[in-house]
Amino acid sequence: MRLAARVSGLRKGQSKVVLVLSGDRRAPFEGDRIRRTVRRAVRIAEALDSRPPDVWIYGTDCQRLPAIQRGSLETWIADWAVLAKRPVFEESRMKDNPLARFGRDYGLFKGGSVAGAMEVLRKEYETSRVPVLVLFHVESMEGEDSRVARQLEKASGKPLFWQFLAQLDEMSWSVLNRLDDVRRERPRITNAHYNNSWDMDTSAGMDTFLQYAMIKPYARWVRESRQRGAV
Image 1 (cartoon, rainbow, N blue to C red):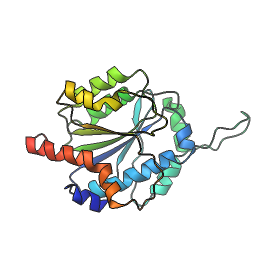
Image 2: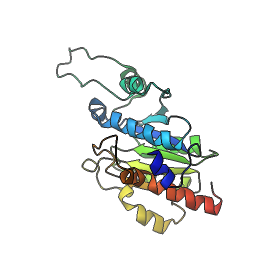
Image 3: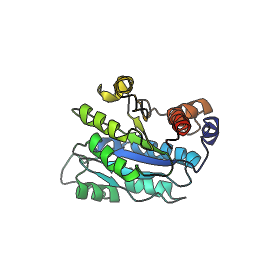
């Protein structure tokens, strides 16, 4: 990943990486999808940022999760990226963990709002002194197209790049599939890209070409923004 970053012209420590996990439903946390997403985001942060990524999770609201400490990634994943499968019989006791308790406190895994999370994140990072790569995991976006489009417009010109991530076979058609149309109607909205194959089960030793493809849209936006003096 570091080689891919250098090929893209991105220098370590000159970007901020933020990972946003969907707490729309619990099923992705019961398998490998979320832990795989976290590991990939950490690899990107290791190449671009001077710190591990900030991690947020959203349902109907958006909340920051505890920081990932260096050298403690697997412990963090066990605490915050994994849920035990829901038992068939209600009387069966489920092993509790910090994420399960957090989910109960903040009403996660009962639906979620992409646009609501975008608003929280925009307000949190819009004054960043370095460009921010927001790796935004999406599970569902039904009925949110207009609200997401408005958030994209509000974030245009800010030092935020929305890299939306989804699984190809589980996302219905949405405004994320129409980002070219969005840009034609609002040319200022250049800071968004959609990748619906992020969850492909590829090895950690992904070749340089694929690594480069993962950060290429962000790198292009950073170069163009710097040429305009925007970041």
